[in-house]
Image 1 (cartoon, rainbow, N blue to C red):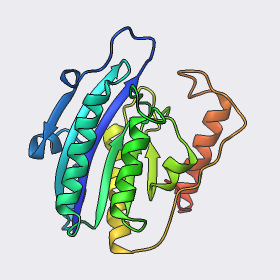
Image 2: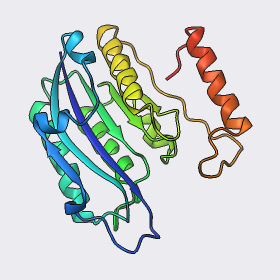
Image 3: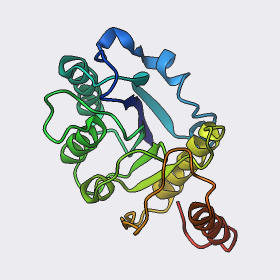
Image 4: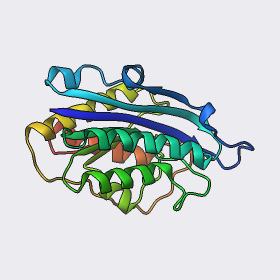
Length: 218
């Protein structure tokens, strides 16, 4: 079995007085990019070959110049097309809070996922790791098979979350089933860096309890 892996991470801030150019990215390909994705040995231990695509980390910055985004997205889509008939699944590490100048809808993350789903069809498993304050929408979630964010702030559990999602993808490939994440908007507003306030702490505790009880939770 084969899985394609890619990463596009940009946390855009429209108040920053400069735009993100391609030169602002840590941009890598092939095995060099794969080494930065924290995948560990989960796929190798399961006998699954990983096909590396693009690793593009822009960290935090301004709004992304569209030509820079187009280059990254098209490189990823080109790799998927090249291996489409061989792929069993896709692993994506996205931030969720990118903003692309002149892009319909604004979000680079949402656009990438939409284009990939249109390319691979409705059945291929797509597992997404994201930042907990990335922007979600019904369409974005519907285009995933599994989506899971880090749970710590600062994000000390990035590698742990990536490994967890790799295991989810391995499990899906070994035990094929039609699952989708559920999108729900809760009636609350959390300010920045408030992840340990009572409401969010309660939600996280519930998720941990469900995992302990072996109730499927991603």
